[in-house]
Amino acid sequence: MWPLIKILPVKTNFRFVGFARFAGMASILAVIGSLFLALYPLTPPCGGLNCGIDFTGGTLLEISTAPEAVDLAAVRGELGDMNLGDVQVQAFGAPTSALVRFQTPEGESAEQAIAEVKTALTGALGEVVFAKTEVVGPKVSGELFQSGLLALGVAIGLMMLYIWFRFELQFGVGAVVGLFHDVILAFGFIALFDLEFSLTTIAAILTIIGYSMNDTVVVFDRLRENLRKFKTMPLAEVIDLTINETLSRTIITGLTAVLALTGLAVFGGPTLFAFSVIMIFGVVIGTYSSIYVAAPVILLWGVKRGDEEAEPLPVRT
Image (cartoon, rainbow, N blue to C red; front, side, top):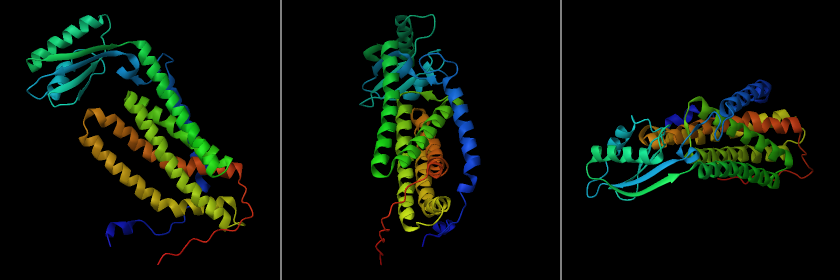
């Protein structure tokens, strides 16, 4: 009896396919713009993306202020004005320990930068024990970058195989086109707002792939049922019917995810902000692609309906 649920209509009759051509043109322009933002200028390793320490190399310090807890805000404030590029500070293990990552400023050696950082941290926190010091070179960073992109490619390929096995080839192609659309636009979003591109960002994009595929599978499963049930109905009308039948579920699921991610973005601190914002964008664009990218591919390709009769759904009382 929750009254806000009644805002969503029980049954809708929107004509989604009628706007598919305009949505397709907008998606193509958005993909082209995103590729330009993400790739230009063509400089390794990340092009137009704001590479983090994971992909550009840098220095890692493990510090301890036992028996007192590490003041993470004081560490960020002290190192924020030292021209160290992307500075990452996070708790590590006990409250008395933390990890500090930073980039070496241009014109300085790694040893000189480490000495300056240690001096600054000692002045800000008092007695500090530096338990570990590691320097990540560009070779290791390049390997991480290649591994991250390989993970994205393998994930998309496995998704296509799954959809092909469960449905038909054209369904798999539609799903993969939608996934490429979502991933490329996510890269464009990261480049447009100059968000840090790191391993955490890769994790966010992989999560977007999973969410988008889940939403697409729901639409495709209902579409397959309707293709068996309405054998003489035009394909465009079947697609419209399918999207309308799954629309309320899509809106509720997406809105729930966005609300949770909004809380994470607001209260999760700077470490989780980029991840949360990218995920929010991914949820919105993944919902859009299920309706206006994946489904229209089925319309363009066509689909074999087969001769089997529709299986009646059990009636729950």
